[in-house]
Amino acid sequence: MGIRKFGRIASFAAATTAAVIMGSGQAFAAANWQEVNTNSNWHCEKTRQHNPYSGVGFQGCIVQNSKGDAQVVLVVVNNGPKAVRIGGSISSGFGSNVTCAASVLNPGFQRGCFAPTKTLKCNVLYGAQVSVIINDAINNGETMTTNRKC
Image (cartoon, rainbow, N blue to C red; front, side, top):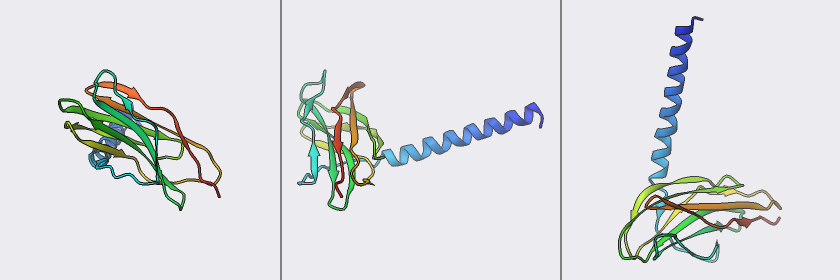
């Protein structure tokens, strides 16, 4: 195989991979901010005020059902005087990971970025963490833990 042919194949492969990653990431990320309705399955860290935007708080939550399925949620509330641009990311040891799409959060509203639901293995302690971006300033939440006792 000649160098030119190899170069064209490598370029095509790189472009295809980039298109798949970019295309699938945007379609999934757009749908992950939703209204938040908590219940006894939600286990959240305390709300932290975002620095430097007073009035904007965030927290990480792990939602776990009785079947051993769990997901991580980044919750953001805007009690400030003006709209803010939000985004963020979620990572966990059990695969409930996602990049939270950029969005606008108006004053008086609360929204959650929901990572995918995953099944926990028995008797394994998992860690999870959220990061929030408010108007381009990043803050990290505490490390949360969860497990499934079997």
